[in-house]
Image 1 (spheres, rainbow, N blue to C red):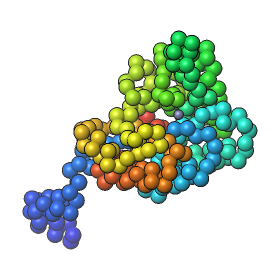
Image 2 (image 1 turned 30 degrees about the vertical axis):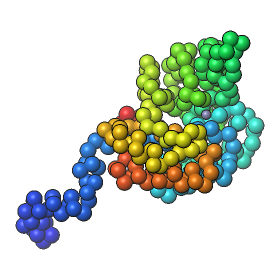
Image 3 (image 1 turned 180 degrees about the vertical axis):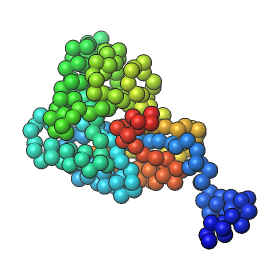
Image 4 (image 1 turned 120 degrees about the vertical axis):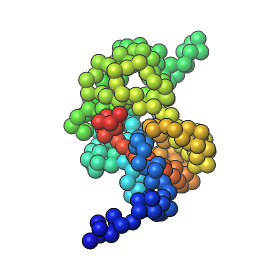
Length: 255
Ligand SMILES: [Zn+2]
């Protein structure tokens, strides 16, 4: 009965009604727009991390979070259990954010980072240590990597290439690697580390509205109440615009 009734409605009228009530329908019917939330610098269980996971989850947004893995060496069972439980919830995926997150200046003023100018042996040791420490907690190695300060060199690409369990790297620019590049095309924190700015985000978004993918970097443990509010506005805006949020493991299947 209902089908017969619908057939009677001229299609053009139906389309008009749909566009009237669902103005974003044409946008959402296009190729999906995918974002991965890349949250940096997990060092311990904090109420800020829990709050960040919670405000994301209630909006249907899964988030990925980078662990600085020497934090796991404290053998704090409370912390390990929290990592495991968050991961197993299905709403959080942890990734390799290095072993010690260090950077320093050399004698000649050159900047060194954990994964930049430190040589193959140093980087191999640090990268694999983090993979192993997270595997000990989660039962398997993380599949994604994002370097501290996003600073990497050719040694890093070699180290990553050699690890069969690693499949995705976060980066600002496309790297010559066998792994999937998850590019941060849009900036999550327009006012600097831990400081998202919704208005500035929207104006940057409008200049790049043809993009179909971005990783979005945040430092939730550095959020104050205002920053958390700006973050929420950003994800709600993207949801309205038809974006889908994915974890690295799910993006691997479509990316
Ligand atoms: Zn970091």
